[in-house]
Length: 163
View 1 (cartoon, rainbow, N blue to C red):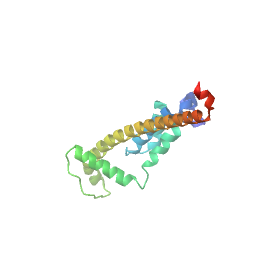
View 2: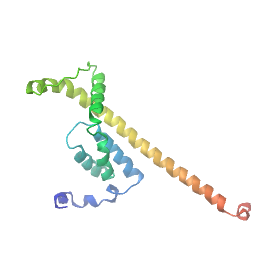
View 3: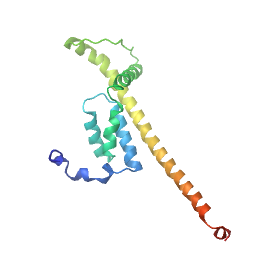
């Protein structure tokens, strides 16, 4: 833990480790957002944002792995297509050449639509994930309360119900 000493007591914040509706929903917001952003060290960025937003830290980091080596190509290609559509640019055919000339010329052509699409989809998807977790959690609590209420009504003697 010597390497994390610069964080001080912040890692002792209970919400970073507990499972409750707010921490989990914020973890989905952070983790899903970063899984859509093509950048190195996504997990590290998600961890710092989880600390900043007081979200469940392990869940935030794990959710970044929605974008893994198998899902990254289709996700980022879709992000690129959405960005190209927003910018009203044609989708370029896939080609790659490992040279500085190709990278310097294509970085703007591909990078701008890719990051714009990534930011838009990350924001929309993360907000939807947040709202869905909030809704599902509340629905589960409401269902449990109703079930307990029915159980209590069933278990009360008939004499108590009449009075």
